[in-house]
Length: 121
Image 1 (cartoon, one colour):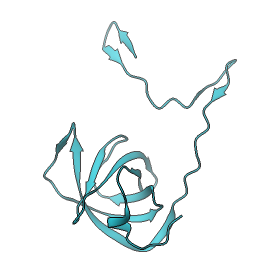
Image 2 (image 1 turned 135 degrees about the vertical axis):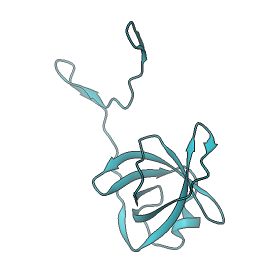
Image 3 (image 1 turned 120 degrees about the vertical axis):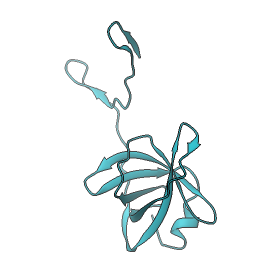
């Protein structure tokens, strides 16, 4: 974090390495998700700055593990967005990155209320 004289504070995040003479990189864990069929239809809310948006969005979980999933939706999401997947017991997740067909998310609570008895790795 640095105070830039023209535009204020600049935040640098998600650095995985430095090239050049330093050539130092952090290894990223391999996270595997399995495609699930039929896809799980979901409704979810966006959480912004600890405030829950009351607009219910629709999407599908198309691949999952016990800790991560791929969500496909029509709305635009960003890394670090928090989502509450609606249901009897809310399941929370954080958007990690946009991928070709959707968004890669990490569950921040137990995923079993949504994923049920699907056999996952």
